[in-house]
Structures are given as C-alpha cells and as structure tokens.
Length: 346
Image 1 (cartoon, rainbow, N blue to C red):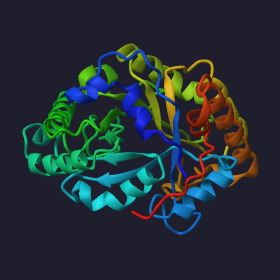
Image 2 (cartoon, rainbow, N blue to C red):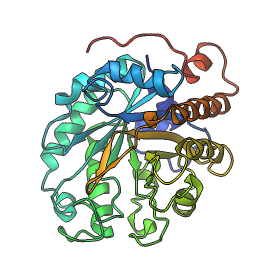
Image 3 (cartoon, helix red, strand yellow):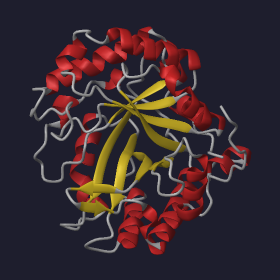
C-alpha cells in the first residue's frame, strides 16, 4: 500500500555511489518527498509496521487515504539483535513498496569504544545481513547527538562523549557497512534543532560528505512557549545547509501539541514554509505517538483533532503535487500516494 520510494532513493542518490560503496559528494537530482510517520499503538494496540491496520488507519485519518511512502521505527543496538531478526517488518514495508527509516543507537557504550572496534563483530553481522537483503533503507544512527538527553549525546553527562568521538564512531561503523557491501543502507545524520543555540556545534559533529546520504533534523513544538515551524527550525536548517549544501534533508521527527496554540494552523504554516523557505527539505516523518514530559502527557499524534488531521492531509497533498510535478503515468500515480497494491505477509 505504500508508494514506491525504495528504487527511487537509489536512483536519486547516485547509482555510481552505491556501486562503489561510497556516498556521492554532490548530486544533480532531487529526491522525491519521503513522507510518513512513526505510528504508535493508539489505533490498534500495536505500533506500525507490526500492525498494518495501524498504517491504513493512519492514512485514512490523517492523509486523506493517500499511501505514505516511509515507515519510521527502531532496531535498538546492533548487538541486541542482528539484521535478520527484523526481517519481518523490513519485508512488510518493502513488500508494500515503501522504505523503512530505522533508528540504530549505541546505547550506553562510550563512542570512543565504538570507534576503537569494541563492537565490530555485531556491526559486521548486521551490515552483512543487510547487504544480503539488498533493498534500500534509511538508517538514523545515534540521532540527536548534539543534545544531552541520550547516552550517546555529546554534551557529556554519563559517557563523556565528545564531537570527535562521535565523528570517529560514525566513520568507523560506516566503513564496516561499506566493506560488507551494504550500499543499500542510506545514512541519515540527524541532530536536534537548536533554536536557543545552546547545544553542541553541528559543524564539529558532521562526519563528512562521503559518510552521509541525508542530512536531517528533529524538533517539536512543546507549546509552553508556542513556536512556529519556521521559528523552531530556521537557525539549525541554515547551519545544516551551510555544512552540507548538496545533501537532501529529512525532518526525522516532528510534532506539535494542541496546548498553547492552534495545532491545525501550525501544521498548515509548516507545509507553507516547506514550499517556500525550506527547499532543501525532501522528507518529513511525523512522530505520531503519545509522549510524556514528567507527568504531562504530550499530544503528538496528528489526529488529536479533526482540524489537525485535515490540515495535514491538505498540506501533504499540496506538497506531493509540487514534488511530483513533471512525472507521468504510474510513477506519478505512485508519487502522489495513490498506489493500491496491498502488502503481502513476509
């Protein structure tokens, strides 16, 4: 039911780069708009992609029945489970014609240990199995590394990580994947937005063009100090395009609360900004899960109001119409999210 994005990802990011096992420093092509969500258990009691009814319910509720082309989910550490442990969900998304955007983390292990090879065997197994599977996936490795809330963060609290150790760990693991032939894995470098300019410098954290396929940003409107998408993202967005101007950018996690403002209007203005001020952004993944901050429940799902769902459906429709412009036939139909092929059981 998802639109075909997997094949397109390889084409737009450079076939020669995939063949050589290295990402391209430049690209003359624009990737399609990769869009979807991390879909929580509020629809069926089970998260996507394990519950495909959750995917179709989300599409019906929030996207006007359009079929999203990416599912965001997580695999934890490479040493907790090898790639083949996750073949079920990977194949379910792939059989539906879509792309898995997966989070992989290093957990509580210091990044310097990763860089010096302490877990090479687990990474090598994961990469070898991913290469054998062969279909495109997007890997968000140690996301939001510029903050201090995760163990792999580079504002040291527990593990005393540094920007240098993050870069060294990223490059080391990337090389393992390259040597294993896992050129189907696209690497998304995904810091958190920093509107108050208080986190680790992004320039110090960038691994380099040949180690990154997508740049990426995560960021939420918590509502305590209501901030528009543009106000939240502009500073970090400008930083990223100065660092990596030729890379397509993904919004890896985004959501807004209903508390403190108008969520539907916030979503509407977000899509307007994507079409005007933020032209380097070629993908958006909504965090469609309830969250908590202390005792406060965070109403991140789009469908917390009918108005918000309508705003998202209209906004993604206009975005797809713009980004799919010039395509014809079945490729255009798929790009617009109108595919009807059901997924098959893995």
